[in-house]
Length: 334
Image 1 (tube, one colour):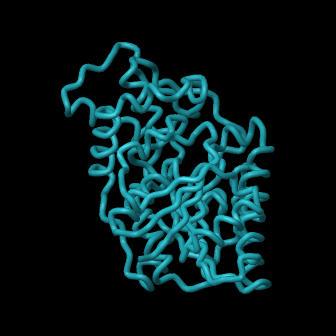
Image 2: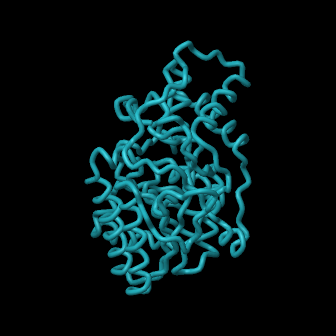
């Protein structure tokens, strides 16, 4: 039976990945330092004997090395990261510490472990920066990050590549588009809009809502990550996207329509409002994911309508999720 470590496993993508790995009958150790966005609610229903949790910071190199020696994983999925662009603009220190130094310490632990283990390092499409016109960034595109967040992720990608070349570690890098789905912290656009609709609050959107993003349902992303562990070529990077681009105003209106289709009464304060744009806001992200589709025979299964329906359903059925979170941690984020 394969043994995996998932760092940041109480986060959005990490918790969904853990559920999928357990469903596939693998053993999983969740490593999480339990920062503000980590939610134990995300894995509250797991009772599997194949699931384990260890509260640890990936910056703790000595502890990570001890875990590697004790657990002897076949693979590590690195999802431990600070991810919210606005927070990185307010204060980038945690992004430097966790996204760059954290990856450095994880890599050092791996080379000191001195046994074969495959690292799947999860990154973002934002490292490519603003993609103009109808272009889609493939894996050969230069890195032109715009925010401290995307710059920190670009730095971590470069670190992983350097350790692959210099220390011959077994690793692959994934760059994924915007994820959405159940268990996402409500500082991000989709769960924020759902929370505000459920709580009769306005729906704030940057500028005029024309910024375009590529959206992928989280389970499709997680299936791709597992495929990368088993089939990805060491030293390679793979874009993971859906080819589904839409602007923010379109997306928010689609969420509103999803509520209307359920005949859920929407409060009078639930109205789209436009707020001042954030500094350095990229207008468009778009990936060319033909490499993973061609070489690994992966493709997304969930279209945007299906994904939004699944996502809205989960939050409606799990409103206690919001009760577990201090609203101050997300009320002024969008």
